[in-house]
Length: 115
Length: 111
Image (cartoon, rainbow over all chains, first blue to last red; front, side, top):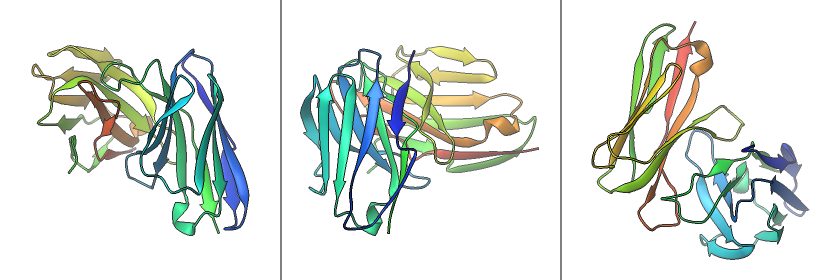
């Protein structure tokens, strides 16, 4: 089973709202990722977790706050977002953190619209 | 500067025709992945190639990894409308955490 699940599928929020995106994998992978993707562009890396610890933050604004409650779950907390943050948010996982060695598996994404 | 140069950017062909997408770099990659993505969905892994010169086949799709592990190609034989989508190549440079993506190729197969 190479499935990564994400909820919700779609999310519409106002600029003053607080919401969370959720991601889950049961492949025993130790690395989990958040990406942001704009239409017809490749995904852009936001955060990397390795063994439940935040390893990489790609200079993401603090209105995005990641959390890894356990080895299977990854959350992305959203607060005071801007309309330009509207995008497809993708979660991915891989056995370990070395991109050159370990294939990343992506979830179906959450389509976020900020009004 | 994009680490992986993917071409062409757009490809529109008739059902039954063949197509090839290229992914090139000046860097050596430990492995390269090809993903296919439909609008509003996440990228779906098609293949991972790891050995220089490797050729992998997945039904009508053929993937090749260059001998020097700097380039890869995806060839689709007798394309069908179901092959329509955004094709992304992605690679992990040696000893790097970050997956580099090509800009993507939007393939449209007309019935």
